[in-house]
Image (cartoon, rainbow, N blue to C red; front, top):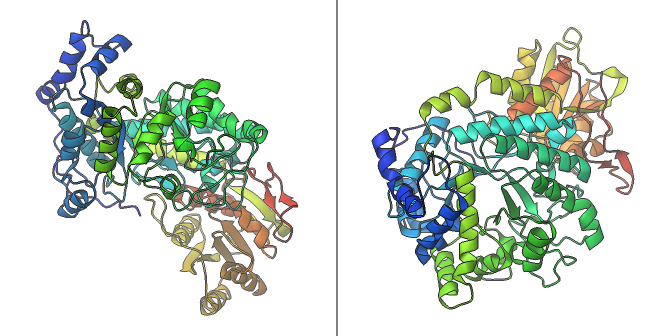
Length: 610
């Protein structure tokens, strides 16, 4: 669910210099007490002194990153006030900060935090102001999931790039670095300083329901190189990158949002397959690493999820891999971390395991008080909290939040969704589209021979605030390229009547483009393609999510993999179909035969061109 509508921001005025100085006075005074105040970021001794002056409640708060509804920190819409009261017991972000002193806030489109870039900047400023005006107030680390592709919380007019598997198909480290650099600059301009990206999972399971095209691919070396490049891009722009989901979520057929997955890899296989991208991220200086809510018996046979596993987070991540940055949990509202222990135990066990940031608990009051009680009763020491608080403050200092917590509207105008950034996204996308089948050299499609094109197929909801629906975007892009193109949505499970309607329309066209979405052996999508091919019209199938669709479509004379149904990837596919650009993408995952999954139909690195 992604709300990209615009509206009143509620706190549109940029803070004045006087307001900024007043709001940061508490931090400045605290730092000055530890030594001479400098314009530069506080050093470690100053940060340690800051921690020593914090109350226990303030320390506990710094460890939480929480959602909050509303487009404004102080004046959200009434529906968002009601949602906040129901879920958190506060009315606004400002009240959340005052009550719990949380160290971070995460933005979601469904929480109405990300309507448009200027509003996002205003919300970020309002959050910083509300926190800094509190006694001993500290800047807030604002985060979001901006992976690009099928997971993004900030939509148009911000620049949206191809997702990870598409970037994997492009195989360019410079493109991955450019993506991180541009996307990071845009996030920073809106006041978002921590991005839960890149995905470092090596996707080796075609049935993976939660990672899939969010991964760069199935080759750990290729994934490692692209992870490191994207990290360099994001962090070079002053945004903390986050490698996820440690120790690796690429080989599961269970979604940890709704179940508790188990990874059956041996320790040796984990070292070869899952560990390399995280090692590469650490070598690249990654600021934060996110945990996975899954069980890996070869790494910890206790039955605990990795998020709550001291052998995994401290024994392997901290001690074996030498990582001393911030460790953040995946959302604590996910079933994978809630299935074994209650919501009051989870945050305490996560901290005991080695976590620093507790992300989005379902019941903040319960979780916050559970940590407080654990310290008061001796299960957790205050020194243990101090270690994590110091890591969080170090990251805030590195990101410049003590020196410059606010953003300006001019920076939004200069940075977000600029023509140059949008053009870069298009260029990167053009290097990702992968041509898998091209019988009789059907592609590129000739406008003179096939002027009238019908676009049919699946129309899943727009994944990231892009225009959608996919059939409409494809038809529009083909129209701009000189074809007469019409769109007919047939859905992900077309009925016999819907297929008949599409077949009738195809007979009036010169060629047909079919957008497919996770085709299975008995699906209506497969029947749709077969019946369209039977009309005798040339059919071009475009897999708009998983590239594995091609194995189910042996009758289609041309097949492309776009890896996502965002505008930028669909426009690239249209340009490839029309011959404006040559297909250059290479499969980053193998595609197995539909009738014999033990046999590879198309290997990693496969891809045709013109």
